[in-house]
Length: 425
Ligand code: FE2
Image 1 (tube, rainbow, N blue to C red):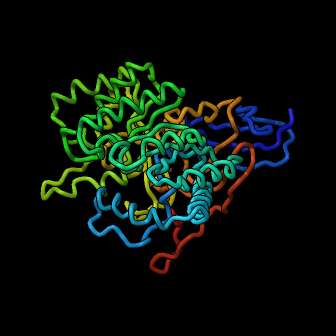
Image 2: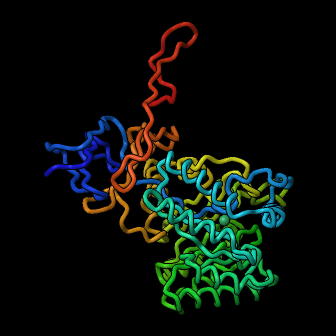
Image 3: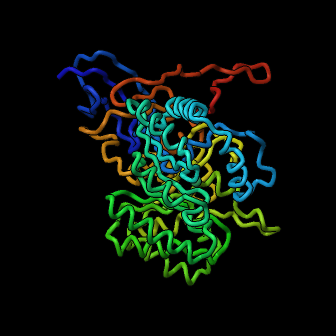
């Protein structure tokens, strides 16, 4: 068999060394040695080649807007939402689109080839929805982009949000979003979940809720989300994003709650960079970490991914589209320090996130889409430790980003050193 592309001597995430043969946009062979002609051969000797990075929680309508019209002085979620409210009237279709496309370039350079973005549906113009639908089409050759219709200011709290969210779904948004803890009352939050899940069930869509993103231990909307998932037969199609209140909940209540989430097959998407930055802002000391109970949920068999949430926007002043930053922070905050847990964090930002998004076509298996990333690291743990360089990114069978390996030796205190710039072992 001839191939369009062969990646030679790749180290796979499970430690196997193999050649990867690509034909068209599919992985056609993964074998210890492929002896065949190919349009191009890439030498991956000593380098990890993995499934691409996937981000299941992002806000592409707000990204790269840091400082417009001002920065978030308190650093809280609520000031971030208020600041986004100041920015919204200033948005133009073209500006949203240009920032989103610039971010997609960053994403590709980092091997991030699938993104689920929430898009605010509270602006009557729905210009961000329309702009991101265009972006989705333009980047489709290399990024799988999913749009969540997200009533940022509350389905019932913001005027027209309910109607606009339905309009966004009619326009082509893929997923139903919500924010129950930001509605006026707990009861409105509960009702919003019932209605949003019913909309999703009727339309055959997935659900992804900003759920209990608060330090308030009595914010228990996740319980209702699990209930509605069961009631409407949405198992496996619903995600609870953030779930930060679980950090502060009573342990006895959590011992009942976690099995309910597992039973409903609701996925969890903590966003460690943002959770550690925004939560606990009302605490003195000791100060809560504010990230949800990741190891406990994993132990219960709940599917847990890591999301990025924000890059340079009203909520977060840093970020580089690097899911290894996300895994690095998640690993620390969740204290997932064993070798198995660290490797699992890498799996979470690749395969698990893809599963949460329902992207069955991704993965390092024959017959799957030929999307992958070659890293300047020998294994997943080293990739996280180094936030390793992305040496080559292949999307749907085509090389879309490449950079030379930087192995420049250093002079240390006047003597040549064998260590390279990134301290690769
Ligand atoms: Fe978010």
